[in-house]
Image (tube, rainbow, N blue to C red; front, side):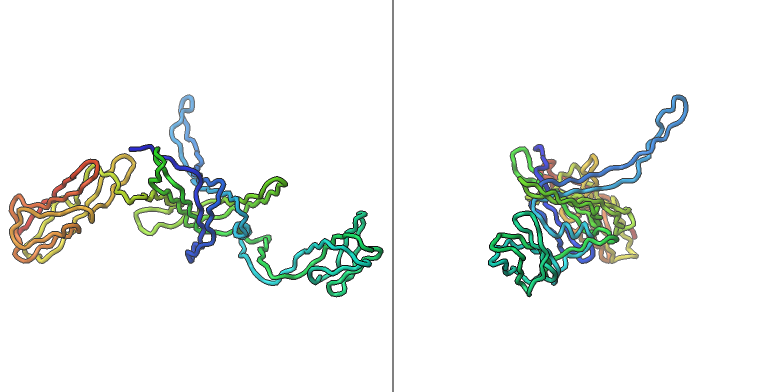
Length: 343
């Protein structure tokens, strides 16, 4: 197997956890990270206080995304508020050249106007609609500062509103040692609590970057076999290649039909055994089923594993179903299911 490498940074998709609607698609990330950590409590006892057991607890998952592009959505998520659009009050600055001490502002002020003169002094003047007159201003160049109203987007950073909870997905490329993309690693966190820590750092010789970080919240499982979880990591093959299988197991190993209870149907499931830390995979629909030694009307779906026996079915001592799966590395893998037909 070729060596594989997780390259560059991940794209980030943030969605509303309730509606599934996308909120942000970050494709200009500078850094992205996924961190899993736990706390440990040591249990010691006996002579010289040896370590008897380590209890790990307080598992947490954290992600951090740093973007080169300035996006108002990140501020809104950290503030826990929507980006609202409407008529808002803003501060306006105008550079003006006075004529006989007067000039026309670019917009209409909602209050008095402060004028800064070249000598460092300032005057507060009352505008006539959008015209100001500066005492002794003459024909000087001045800066005017005032408030006005415009239609714009706005985020209100409230004192008590918690940061948002979103569905977060990181998507990154996995390449082999020839440089070819073999898989996409997709880490999905159904409930990601934004931390609310937000910094805009301005630099004279650069651009400001934005960061979004936080922790995963527990999500209830949808079945009774597994517990709560934080995230799911998925390797999506580019070429749709099948997973390697070393052996197979057909379940159940024996199927029994009773003459008094036919017609009847049984189901065979096929597990692909991968070994190591890999869980068994269900490969039923990609396996083939062929019945042999059967006396009477019994059928088996070629790729379904559904075995059906009609009235009058019986079987020889050697009756069985051959289950076959083809693996590109190990070739044909075979298991057998015994068929019993009782009177």
